[in-house]
Length: 397
Image (cartoon, rainbow, N blue to C red; front, side):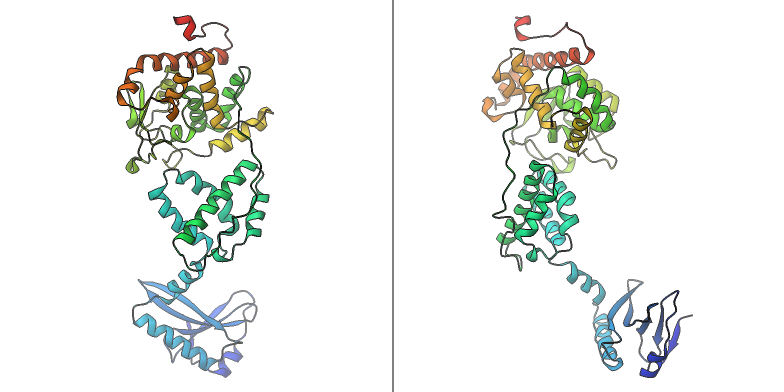
């Protein structure tokens, strides 16, 4: 049974700590008012009330700094708010989290979901690198030195730049929206890591090594990485591939987002139609997907492909390669086989390819199919260690 007593100064002073467990003494003269005696001997005033059938414990303060009479007045004020339909404990919790970077990032995420189709990649960087460091900090208190320290803590230079850009986007939006207290973007003036334009492609000797190493990334990520290499499409678009968009061997990607399917649209907002070579169809049939072809454990589109490639490169002891380098390898193979840059641009959905109309997309169907099968055949030949059956444009003329 609860320990109930008429609390007085003498009674409170006489309460001794239990070295094993804290305990609470309830006041008999004022409903919901109590004092908790901690194992250390510290005593604190509490107000306990019910909200939706569940108890709420509201901490008034330490008994050594707040006298009994003042604690009663504070408790009476809290109980009055409860009587008026308020939830003081929930309101206090909200006040503590309001203004934190975690709260700001959550508000920005809701905005980005509606405005930015690539919000998921930025949100992943925020959750992985920023929230563990800044979640509980007041957003307005985050300084340029905090941003510099964050940059220094990330090993990969390009990733650090991307995280800084994601943080800067949040603060720029907060200033534009005039969110209270945020006047300065702490990411402004922070020096980015030097980068150079990537030209990495897999050599003929590396392709079979990577193909085998893909399997170390797990079934779904392995199949996604193999599909990027075999199709030359953007990693984010391959990761979000949907069965609804595959018809008669063609992958037809809507240019605009389809929120109900979790499809974010293509990067350049142009609808795209690409032939899936037989090797890719075999991958899809093996997975037997329904919805996302490459679905993670929770049914969402697979992620962390870049992390998987980083681990694979370290294991192979080779120069860093990214999922986008697999796409670049496919594109360079198209031109190496003699199909030309126009074919590469058309298949990889580059705007500069000049092929934007529905007529042209379907008009090049036969050639696109031949190009995709030729590149897949070249990779298959390398993977299987055969020196024949490499199809090129010149060989088929």
